[in-house]
Each structure stands twice: as C-alpha cells, then as structure tokens.
Image 1 (cartoon, helix red, strand yellow):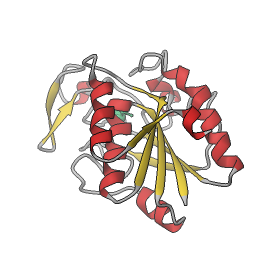
Image 2 (cartoon, helix red, strand yellow):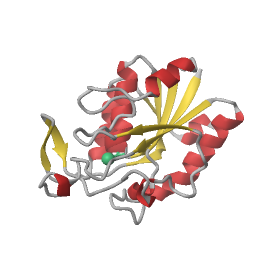
Image 3 (cartoon, rainbow, N blue to C red):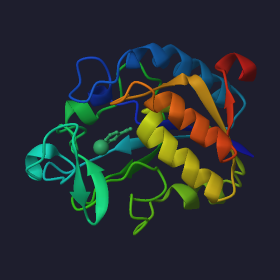
Image 4 (cartoon, rainbow, N blue to C red):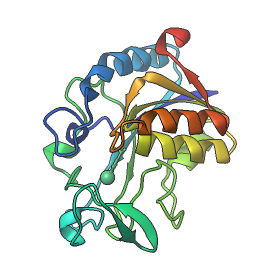
Length: 205
Ligand code: VGL
Ligand code: ZN
C-alpha cells in the first residue's frame, strides 16, 4: 500500500511567515491536487507539523545564536533559526489553502533537540508515531512533498529509505530554504543517490 506524506506546509514556512521559503505557496495547488488524488483512491495521507515549544533551543534567541549561522545543540551541528512554528500559534497552523488532512505527526516538541525528519529527532534519540502509523496501515511505498526540500523533506526521505520504504519525491511539490543557493538541488541529488525516485506531479496524476 502507498501513502502520501505532506511535510510542514505551515504558515511560518510560507510567504509572510517567520522562516518563509521563497515561493512556498506556489506548491499548494500541487499539494492539493496530489492530496485529492490520494483521497479519491482511498490511499493513506499523513501530514507532519513542525511543532516547537517557545523555549526551543533551535531558535537563535534561545541559544545566543545568530539566525542562519551554525552552532551546536545536543552535540549535533545546529543552524540557528528564527522563532517559528510555535505550538498553537498562527505560524504553526497549516496554510489556510491546504486541504485538511486528518492524520498529523508533530515533531520538534523537545526543546533540547531539533527534528527535521518526520520519523526521528536529529539525534535519533526518540521516534515519532509516523513509523507505527505507516506500519499499522501496511504502507510500503511513500510519496513525499512539502517544505523544506533541503531540511524536513530531505531528512524525512533519507530516514524513510533507511527504514526500507520505496520513496518518490514529488519535486514540483517541494520548495527549499536555500541558505546556499544550491541546497535544494543538492538535497534532491542526495535523496536520489540514496534510492529515492524524483518525480513530477504530472508523472503521478
Ligand atoms: C524546517 C528548519 C527548521 C523544515 C523546520 O520544515 O524544513 N526547517 N525547522
Ligand atoms: Zn523547526
């Protein structure tokens, strides 16, 4: 069985948000088309949400860091982010134009460690319920889209491949942060090298 994973299409990652990804909202019609297609076929759909407490240490202001610079958190390299996706805030909400998704996985809830992947935190210390949910629904093949190509999409896809899923990334359904201009391109290449198929929504529907 196959499933669609919709990664972090939240207000703070879209235009006007605190960690806005350039042209993020342009993926929403594509995401909605793919969500509708999966829904019509009764295929499984799950969304992830970046869901930080306000004292999260990935926020520059909570770690004496400078936004966009690299530091260390929990012995791991950490980019300092602006405050974003604070639990229950408008910025953490799904973009209002995104079709409503019932199954939601929350990540980044531990203030001490960041969590890009929908499956595990960045230190793989704890897992979310995503793997259990996919197993319970007999899912072996994943289609992934969302924000951001170079962070949460990338790490979700790499973990999914390691866990043995067949994974396709819907390229036109993703946008990246691109702290360096090539980051999204490199992320897609790395996902492909590790076994993901890079597809376009038109190849699917
Ligand atoms: C993300 C940076 C910080 C993402 C989340 O969803 O890609 N990026 N937190
Ligand atoms: Zn975050």
